[in-house]
Every structure is written in C-alpha cells, then in structure tokens.
Image (tube, rainbow, N blue to C red; front, top):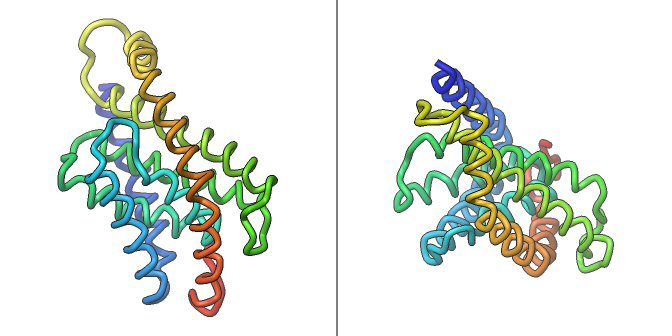
Length: 210
C-alpha cells in the first residue's frame, strides 16, 4: 500500500510540474528555445551513454536561471521524453520529472543571487553556479532514487533500510554526477546563460513567466 501511495504521489507531482511548466510556452520563440534545449540535452545523453554523466541538469538549471523555472522545467521535460527513446519508460520516469522540477526551482532561486547583467563570467556568478549545481544535482539523485525505490513493493527489509542501502550503494554514482554536472555548469553555463540572456527580450515582449 505504501508503494502504491508513493507512486500516486509521484504521478500527481509529475503531472502538476508538467501542467505548471507548459504554461510558460507563450510564443513560438519560447517553444523553439525549449525544444532546442531539450533535444540538445537528450542528444548528449544518448550519444554519451555514461552513467551519471548527463547534460539535462545543467541545461535545466541554466534555463531556469535565465528564463524562469517554468521554461527550464519545460526544457527538462522535453529532454526526459526524448531520452526515453533509448532509456525506456518506467517508475523512474515519473520521479525524473519531479526531480527536474526541483532543479528548475533551484535555478530560479539561484537567479536571485546571481549577476543580472549579460556578463556571467564573474567570480560571484561562478560561485553561485557551483553551489546551485551541487544542490540541484544532489537533490535530483536523491529524489529519483528514493522515489523510484519507494514506488516498488517491499523486497526484504524495511523501507528505510532499503532507501539507505540504495543511497549508499549509489553514493559513487551521485558523486560522479555532481562532479561532472558542476564541471559542465561552470564551463558551459556562462556562455549558455549569456546566449539565453540575449534571447530573453524576444520572448513574449520581454516578459518572462517565473
């Protein structure tokens, strides 16, 4: 019963994130940006099929910082759907959607502490990007792991024991994920944020839905 309720909770959260984020698609320019970012992230994940090395978190984080959480999450949803072509669809997909939503929220919060001008190549911006990347990536892994595991029927041990065990077993994957995502964000984030910042005034007359 606990697994069923967890699965239903994840479904409701994922559906809510999907509905909330798609409300940001207010024009052809934003549709194009969301599609390009999402497909780019998915293409990287497919071409580089290395566990814990992916581009979705970086792209969602940067898009959320520059264009708002809804737009960033929408790009992440496109990436998840496109990546499912090779990665398959399962319980984990629901929790990936929830995790991407959290990454988008982290990006929106980080935007309040970052430099608002087009110049993202500053020390303060780098510090913000590092902190945001570590928090977002860690949250992504924990939500996906815990949510997916709790959505399955018990197979020995208590739920807490199984979750702790899964987190410990996957600790090295999480560390790898955090390290590579942070590297991608620090190196590729500033130019991506610069480009998105220049595109921002063209989106719905310059009004961006957070």
